[in-house]
Image (cartoon, rainbow, N blue to C red):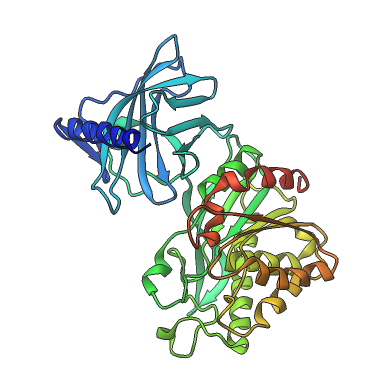
Length: 409
């Protein structure tokens, strides 16, 4: 086993050395060989240039330069910087079979599959990494630098009826549209908190979940990730339950934290109203979802306007963590699902440092006592203490979510 691992490492090191010895060009932080070609032929749907990110964070370009009649493909694989390197590229052979492209010598464990959305989805090293890529024009990437080279969704600003300091508030929203003119049913997915709330730089991060969005696009939903006030470039002050001294982050007191949840609900409703005004969104019920605090926002919104929504996807939802904050906050908020009679799917991870499964079951039971059509799906995320990031390991929940979505159409 050790000898095999050393041989693989040596082969990859040789590839990196070979690539670094050649001239290269950069797309953002991703290096490419200066002689790369992006064919115009359409004899294989994989041919061409694809760009996206591994695990929502590391920039990635895949260029399929040629596919032979036997399915053998010439591929350029390139990634940007991470804590261990400054970016690298190499050329490899891959095999195309049907809707799958697999690096075929066993030395590099990446596999890509065509999505019905027109994108491709990548899996690395036996479900240790995930990527969604969309087709790009190589010449444009090289000639016209843009900040959103690797962003799958498009960021737009929703004009809302919210007012702060005498001005209407715009909410930045990441949109993923299916092919076609629409109008489409809407899925709205809410982001969580920023940990302790003590790092204002985290407020600027734009949040979305590419794999979930692509699954929903495949099934016909237009997917929106609204960034609430003061988050992700949205106008206004981020103020969802902060201590009087904002440098101390979120407050653990129910008297402060619960109004913060109400403010998040106001933003969520404003985003929904603005989205429903779009010509490409139909007038049917909306699918809700969210991660962490966003899961709670989805629960609140479903209870606030129960006839407007078809179902709720709750990924590791909670407002304050298990060992911090008034213990009545989470049960109080989950009871606000109220009269909502659509299905709710909750996905929680074992070994979550914020919301253990046992603790989460306490406040999830508040919904069940109200008669909510609720199902809990528990997953084991690889590694230690990673349960809170279940959303980003889609092989653990994709089949369960697909079954759930059949209930919501």
